[in-house]
Image (cartoon, rainbow, N blue to C red; front, side):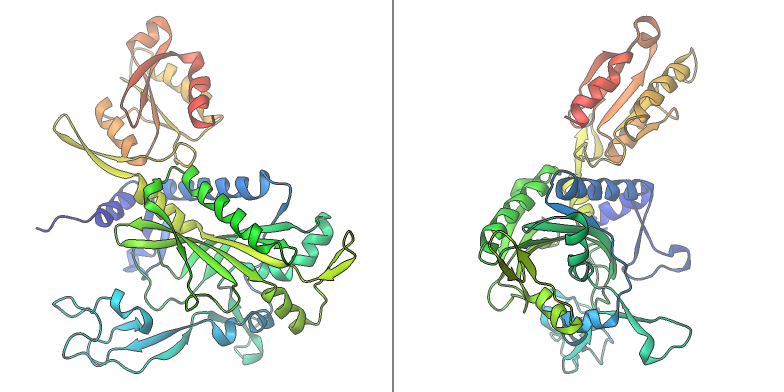
Length: 443
């Protein structure tokens, strides 16, 4: 039997431990659509909270926004999505497969032996045709063309059309930014690689509005800040790199663009994009809406459309990156130990409280410690099975610390604190547990 790949093992662990499930699994599932279980939603929420703290709470020059998913259809005409948000699609008349014409070398034909589409002698590919990635739906009781609306394919446009509202209500001045986290939808031709490319996902986007002429400096500033943020999640520095978009790759709206890429088991892939969008978006919306979107700079006594530096990252991609980066297998005492080595800041469970046995007053002491810990962090209480087995369960869940209440606790008031990564243990007074955890989780 062939050895399972790292991704196969990770997918299995995610289901077993309640991180990610196949959507509608009892009905056979829905392709490339995933549900986040108890640990998965906690992990993703922690990542989103870390992003929000870095982008909004820690800065005075960025405001938050939560724009609606459904927008006036003219928004997507102005942005160019109706006419240009397309991928080239080819079908194979033989295997009935469907592929992106510009990604054939990265695709696999379903026929055996494994080859790229078009490489089998029986392959019969159609000519490429453009396929719009936006999902359409209908607003109102009648399915008629006048009522067509779209599920947004990005959150950025909701920021642009609210730019003046936020500017005026917040009394900000240029330079300033608007940040948003929200669901988006793209009818991808070839989704895959677990949760890396899906049709429904969450974006964390920030649009930073700057004076024309300062955009290149701000672009470099945000490049540095965004790479620093990914490293702060505990991602291995050697698995992160920059990819600069060449002239052929640049989007029509971009003056410059860089991707932050991570080395997944399936290759280097983008997890965040930083773009200099110039004044393209505001200019298009100004032209199509007839609404003046210029900024009046009192100090310079000048009116202008701000340039925009965009940072755009997928919450689901970062969650997958964190899972892949954290996964490791170790041999301990002749047995395999599976560990998710999450940084404590994003770990779904910060600490587990484990009474050694369910008698002699240990459960009562353990519950007291557990209640103290869970007032401040997410915690887990487990009194089932051998202590070694409980440690392994917590290792697989990525819990950084375990607190064991044992016989010594009853005699001297100390507990055993175990570190997930080193497996080192130390005795700490029960009334100092919260302080001990705080220095390692928060500080």
